[in-house]
Amino acid sequence: MLMHKVTTLNQFIVERQAEIPGATGEFSRLLHHVGIAAKKVHREVNKAGLVDILGRVGTINVQGENQQKLDLFADTIFMDELRASGECCGVATEENQDIVVFDEGLCRDGKYIVCMDPLDGSSNIDANVSVGTIFSIYRRRSEVGSPPVVEDFLQAGTEQLAAGYVIYGSSTMLVYTSGRGVNGFTLDISIGEFCLSHPDVQTPPNGRIYSINEGNYVNFPVGVKKYIKYCQEIDAAGGRPYTSRYIGSLVADYHRNMLHGGIFLYPETNAHPVGKLRLIYECNPMAFIAEQSGGVAIDGERRVLELAPESLHQRVPFYIGSREMVMKLTEFLRFFNNI
Ligand code: AHG
Ligand code: MN
Ligand code: MN
Image (cartoon, rainbow, N blue to C red):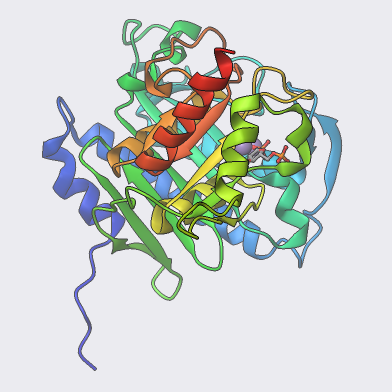
């Protein structure tokens, strides 16, 4: 049978290398290792029901949340691969209070740092629901050869060289941008390669899906409450009721909305008075992907990518999705915050 020509992630990365300002083979090597780590996590996620890797390890992470075993697994796998690439001099991840410095061998001279949520949506793992990995790559600011410092990790999202996510869903996909559009690769397990399946993803400018944890409704800002009602109420022309879809895995909720058109909202709540999602390893990478596919990401007032991070685990309110939906939400937020 005639085989169709497929473009693998590695081929694609090498072909695109020339388009990234100042990029070299080093950067491609780093992305290549992200792909390897993603395959290893895919393997573990897919056998999670078979072996004793489910459930909580009994510790809590730096933000007081239960760490699931797979959280730690994914953290270790990605860190090991990034270290093995020799191009990354340090990482900041959800599972580590401080930056982790790679100061052995080649890593010491690595030009890049990575911010990462190794396993996103981990409360869903033991129910066989989609989870993800989020990553973001920056060029270090400190001198090459010296250990990286926390300031290297607190750069604005506009400085990202590349960002992406892996979704471990009904199939596993790696979606990334290096600032020249968004491309999605589906893991073909028969050949063990990510293959280009979603070239140049464009998110619909408008949509009909809203994604929010409505259990927190009573604590939402008034503008968010009014926007939700706007989605739910029939207008004079008989149109409107939107569809509510919420998985509880940012990666999976965003991915669906990016393809079909929609908005994801995580506002301030009682439990999370400044928002729940973390700026440097959840919001910024997703915001970069959103903008590169034609969407928008704001914290309620400002463009997420322009926020100046103050700390590694900083949280912000987060609204992301189709341009016209985020613009409509903005009208509600402005109007109701001023009364
Ligand atoms: P993580 O599993 O990395 O801690 O992230 C969970 C996040 C995000 O994936 C999701 O959108 C959100 O938490 C869900 O929060 P609620 O359970 O409060 O809705
Ligand atoms: Mn997360
Ligand atoms: Mn996580």
